[in-house]
Image (cartoon, rainbow, N blue to C red; front, side, top):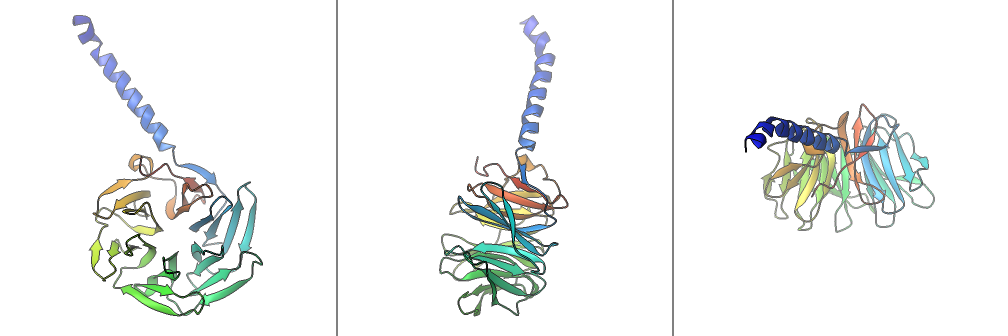
Length: 275
């Protein structure tokens, strides 16, 4: 017993060193997979084929194929922001500073506007009914746009600088807001505030199963997993900050979660948020 007691300090030091090593390994789990962007805002993928990245400062959208080949598929889209892929493979892009949304044809690459006269549209995502949800930041609204006609309908308003939106399996939407809120809106219109622990929610938001969302916390430099009862856990390296200013979030080619940062211009692969 005396010998074991004497060894306790050494064992404690060994345990501390082991824990530090484990945490340092977790801290590099969000590895950079793509680099060379300026200000990535939107990330959207065609599973198994390609991932698209919008670059706000460059006014471009870049396609990255499975083999790593890159091609700019759209230029001169002022402040290119949110991205969404339609069921036919067409890519939709929000122009934040020009207040419109364009469709890029998957075959010809032709670009045409599907909605105009918006108010700094930022994040976009398709609803189950086929309409395009738009975080209309300047107006404090979420709109639903019929991309075949361009007609926009109000879904909900009263938000604090909405920048991201996603529809859940139950038909509710969750809205990330640069003004500090994350709000769930039920189909009947009832609102539930979920973002108490957030510093400044960003553009990146996506469903992670039927009862949770991943949301970029731009102010804290992390991605958080938020369940619909308001419980949060960090989806990035045990609460450690990611490099740069975290803005973009979306699926990669193989279904992995990707997050993009301003400052570094890098796209990182996140660990599984549910582990």
